[in-house]
Length: 274
Ligand SMILES: O=C(O)C(=O)[C@H](O)CO
Ligand SMILES: [Mg+2]
Image 1 (spheres, helix red, strand yellow):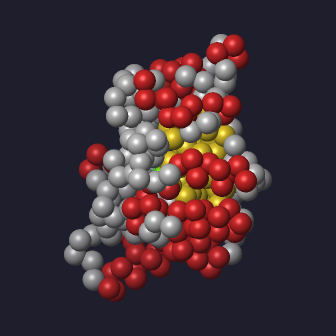
Image 2: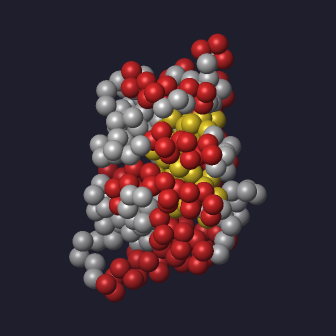
Image 3: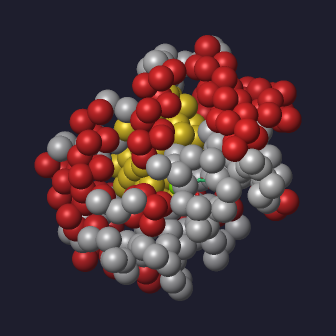
């Protein structure tokens, strides 16, 4: 199992490129981020190599984040923009040696009626059908992630079953579910049963964790992460678990949860770190 520091949320005390070194010196072998696009992919690769860490996940461009965009894949008026964003995502993923990228569905407008909503769903599906036909490295997966409606009102994809059903309906091996247990607990709960089913489905591409409900460290949570990691170990999960939480205070000081949950073997020991 690969424990990945999400450097869009962790180590924000530092400038983005410096977070790579900080994650490495905290013992992480793996890192992920939301949007790397303000920096050259080659520059990020160089930093990752220098600090002996490997990226495991990025998001495809998701529109104008500051203006409230949360993805492009379902917006009927932005199909061209969505399609144009994909080569850039692939360039970064390939350069950084990542075999997956998350494509955000996006939000429908507050004013949407049932017909509009249906149009967003059909656009989402046809964009994903287009996406899986695009050339990508062997074994590359596009991820879709159900997100909770409290943090992101109007986000189209909210439930695990929606993501699994959509992937089944499209019928392409290029699609996988990004299961963020924070969002899942807020929307649906019953985490262990859902996680067990996802692990058995062959459609699970990536897992993310955070304390619920405040999205701080995983040991500060209504969700019992010891049980989650026991299940991942029992089911021999080999993929990555992204630590996508906002540290309550200093990132390093908050990392005691790794030891508390018995996961220190997932980090490098002091002697191994460069
Ligand atoms: O918000 C999340 O949970 C994510 O994983 C994405 O990066 C989208 O913001
Ligand atoms: Mg997430």
